[in-house]
Each structure stands twice: as structure tokens, then as C-alpha cells.
Image 1: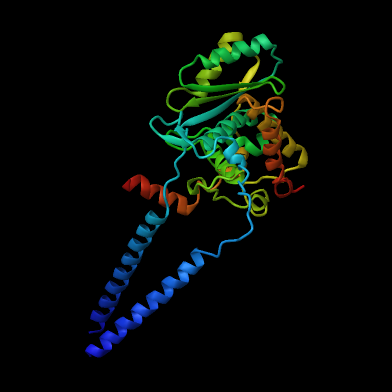
Image 2 (image 1 turned 180 degrees about the vertical axis):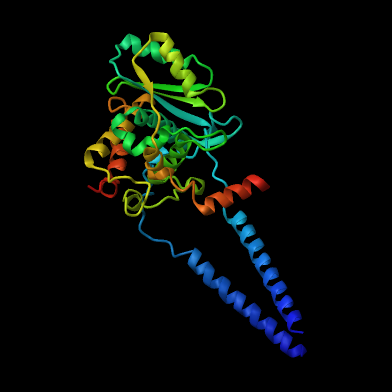
Length: 145
Length: 200
């Protein structure tokens, strides 16, 4: 008799827990909608030059990069000796762009790579992509939509 | 039973008459005998950069976008390149250059969307789809309330940031020489956040 009550209680507990979990999942799915980003696959990358570039070299470097497939935009900051460009993921890589720049003029330059500290800190408007709720809702929408 | 039903219906009818007469009074106020000149509200900054007119979105073929948002997004996107190339800004915006795996949202896309949303709301957009849902400016830039903020922003870096936005504006053909009023208003808008963002 006692055993039956325990089994019955366990089944009820499990049933209620499962129902509540399903309700939670449905609720998360209903109240969160996936954020739609323009240019979600547009990646920025930077090349830091260790030498000054004259205006002709700056134009040449920009033309070299802009002519590559998958490149969206290029910006040269001669004062800071940096070149920033945007490329479509899957159509180009920052390593290939760097190699192309080096071939074009054998410059003293390096590819800017973020260290771990820089990766984990920065502009607050880019936060929130690692939260528990974000992961669950994003996963749910990816699974069900 | 029948009598009660008739009484209830009569009460309901009376109530609805009273309610409709009150509503009419509220909606139709007494005309003001003094003549007034119609006041046209001044266009918001959002209206001045294009407003709610729908145009095709060059980034998403087949989709439409409000012209005001398209203008602001173009300025933001150009400015993000300038910011990413500014070595003094790397300590705040390094994540822009962090490479992510295929299928993940890049730092560029995240900043472009959030900053454009913020500017849309701040310039007067009423479109709820562009609502800014982030932290308050003060909390977002306070390292004790936002773990992603590695350090507090100083006034010099804030001025430099506004300068980078100015360069982004110029890349979109808007300069103090050809549209001083618009540049001044946008700069004033950015500086209205300075007290919340500069915390050292």
C-alpha cells in the first residue's frame, strides 16, 4: 500500500514537472522572437601597418583589397596606419586578404588578432549573446522555425 | 422570471444610452469661439533624415525599409569602419574585429543594429520594431553594472568617438559645409548622452 502511494506520488511529481517544463518552453518560444540582423555575415578585419604609407600606397592597398571577391567595404586610416575591411563569411578570409596585401607591396604589416581579454570586453551594445535565456530562445527558434 | 428579464434588458439599454451620451460629449467638445492658427509640429530629426517613407532595402533584396532608418544605418555602418580603424577606440570596440564562426552574428552586425535602433528612437522614430531594448546609457557604461565594460570612458575618448561618427557622416555626403543644421543636431544628440557615458 505504502509502495503504491510512493509510486503514485513520484508519477504525479514527474507529470507536473514535465508539464511545467513544456509550459516554460512554449512560453519562451512565444515571448522571444529571434533578432533579425542586416549583414549578419559581414565580418570586419584589420591590418596594422608598422610603416607610414603615402597616399599612392594607401590607394593601391585599398584597390587591391576591394578587388577581392567577398569584400564589401574598405577604410584606410593613414594616421593610425590601419586598414579595415568588411568581408562576407564563407566567401573570403582575413588571412587571404592579408596575404594579398603583402604580395602587392611587401609591407611591414600584421593582421590584427584580438586577444582573449579584448574578446570578452568591449562595447556594451554587443552584450547578451551568451546569456542562458538567449541560448535557449535562439536554439528553440532555430529548431522550430 | 419574464418580468426580471425585461427589467434587466431595460437597465442595459438605459446604461448604454447614458454611456454613449457621455462619450459623445467627450469626443465633441464645445467649439472655441476664438479663431486659432493651426500649429504644424516641427519635423523630428528622424523625419529630416528621411522619415517613414518606405524605400527598398539595398542590403535585403525584395524588402522595404523606412528611409529614415536606412539613412541612419548607412551612417552607422560607415562610422563602424572608422571606429574599427581608430586604434584609440580598440579598447572599447575590440569585439568588432573578433572573428566568429559561420552562422554566428558578427560584432559588426550586432553594433550596426543596436546603434541604429538607438539612433532611430533618439531621433524620434515611432516604429516599435526599432525599439532600443538595451540597458540605460549610464548602466551600460558603468563597469560595476556591466561586466563587458572593461573600463570607464573618459571625455577625450568620447570626443574622439563623436569625431569618428562625423567622419562616417562625411562618407555619406553630409558635412558641416553642406548641411550644418543636420550635423549640429546629430552632434547635439550624441552629446546629450555624454554625462551618462563619460564616467571618469
